[in-house]
Picture 1 (cartoon, rainbow, N blue to C red):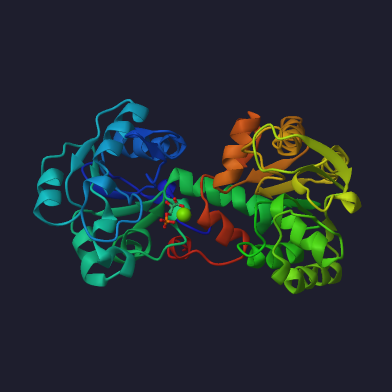
Picture 2 (picture 1 turned 90 degrees about the horizontal axis):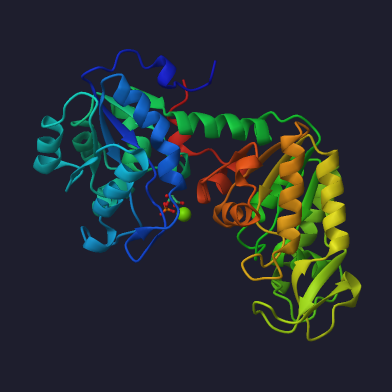
Length: 398
Ligand code: 3PG
Ligand code: MG
């Protein structure tokens, strides 16, 4: 039995108004949704509730509006995109509380789906104000949270509502929590983590937590340079947070004490400029030229990362190994991602990945579907990996 209530526990919902918190904070360019993954992920919960005759009312935020309602942050175009992805009509109410919301709900038939306007048009949403939460709750009989990726926010629609209405995890929330449990909560060992990305400063808590939980930690991306420099390797002109040398050393000490191997790059692909197609060469990590920048890890390092993936029963991955967004510096990330995907397909590995860049990198490598689970969460995935309780998840626990 799950430690939180799911749609399996929800009982009869026919004719009931179910407020479903979803994450529709999707990337948009020129009025078009450029990645609909988050919309696709909420489809099962909506379909299940609708099929059982519920009135499905979607609550969501979009962007970070600061001064009340604006066309820029309206969810109306996203309602249309959601209808397209779900292949069914999705109504839209121009407010999430008050008369407009109530009228739209009153007009719903059993099985209908309606999206409310951006909850963040009210400051009270982010402040989790009880009076506002009550207004939201007035339009529902039951609350379902299917927005893991917003669960690190203690907002009215992500946390407060669960205190006002009977509350359940939606199918995506459930799948996410199950996958994360397999990744770090109660994983099959050995567990290997790959952490990359530009900066150590944004991931100190993550690294500190991981070295206590995993058997090996591969550090790649720009952040590896800070570790290399801390141990005395000259990284030339590479991105490097020299002021964090002490923190990096401390993480390496904690790792040694916890018996966690730290794998740093043995070689690097260096260039003189940060540009697609820039002339580059692979050098031993001790031989980075003074005017060179490490933009990816080299083939020797990829081999060692893949060897660690072979030894692992569980892999958690956050952050690319190199500057994967510009070629040819995507090579190491693509090679390791393909290797992890192949091991997963062969039934040898449980692979869980998350974070905005990571999902983009796995999509770029064409292997996102081959991982055991790819989280669409950014901040929430990180905080979860840091071992922090997520307010939106905690409140759903039995
Ligand atoms: C996200 O996009 O990471 C979530 O939707 C949360 O958005 P936020 O970082 O603006 O709270
Ligand atoms: Mg975010």
